[in-house]
Length: 514
Image (tube, rainbow, N blue to C red; front, side, top):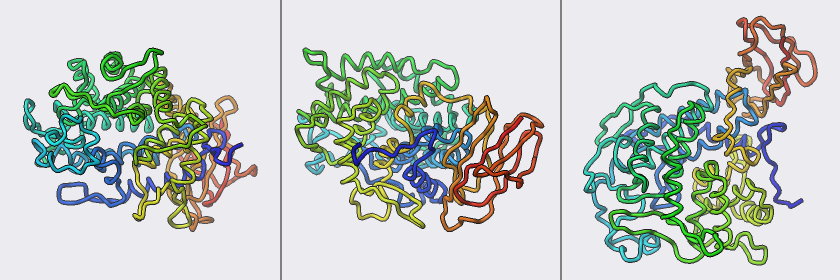
């Protein structure tokens, strides 16, 4: 076995230590209040530094940080409240002024089109350089659309509402709460407030895709396969949970994209993928030579769960062009973007490409600087040689998708969501982050719920704590064990719930009912 083999989180073993450390840091970020209004500024640990100029906005940290939470449910299906709290805090920030700061402040044509640094010009078609807005300049107000104050209900800005819909769909899945018709306010241009529901956002995206077979704009004038694929994935989960068919127009777009936004060689292999397409300029942005492999890589998280074969074709194209699957050559990163390598690492693990996995895992373990930090070393992240006091959220979000669950967990969220957990015994009232839950397992035939606890705050080990198990059959006989011994410190609180008193530590608590 390689020294870079993965100590993965599994349903049988529970979340591994790295996942628990990242969860603790996510909790810190989500539950520490900061001001995302136009009068304030997000805490510096929200990543608005990675991947400039395109993704250097804190909204991307919010959206990508959520990905591990529905995956973690495979290890802890009976404990969801901590994940729901984090998702609520993420969604609350997403709809603020700072959540949509690019749409709310980058108005009209970019006045700096002729003053970009040379390295940024590589993402602009060569014949347009010096007179064309960079990716990242949203251009609210550009003709023919004009100024549109609502960051959701507008012609462009697909990446804002697409990832918002994905975030809300994950929140629905994790919580089990049907809140799709609950209204909320979204902050737009000049602090105008716009009322939306999850249902209306999903329907708006789907209808827009019907009307625009080429695809909807992200930044005004640019259609991105990346943004389109994420928008489709949010619709797919929405459909899976609510038995709708809003994702169907996206599937039509995939067929269009394969004809117009990517090409194949004589052997039928994908040999180029558009980074984006501008229908106003009729310009397709593609990277030269092996660098084009990155355009395929960025789509994998979003396309693979929706079209396995296309995702596999894109992955093989990228690995062939970059040489990462070839054991005869060293792994060379042609772009200074660790998130691209981490995406390939995730996909290699997902499909069982052990050769590429071994090669890329060695890079991540030796160069990405994995380490525990914080009080009692209870937090974990990859530091990537950064001198900042906080790890980069966007890059860690992708890396932790590898740590937090078994291969296939991400695809299962969208294709086989576990909705039976809503009707099974559920753990609530956990005093997280004093005490944490590493694993839960429910055996319906034997009528046993197992709950594995640990000291999420090591300094509180040994202190008393209480949690509740509810959703039990009414008035069922109950017996509780802790670490194989009878536990008497529990009490019935309602006909379908019991409260259990334990100490903060590593324990396996078994509740037998009925």
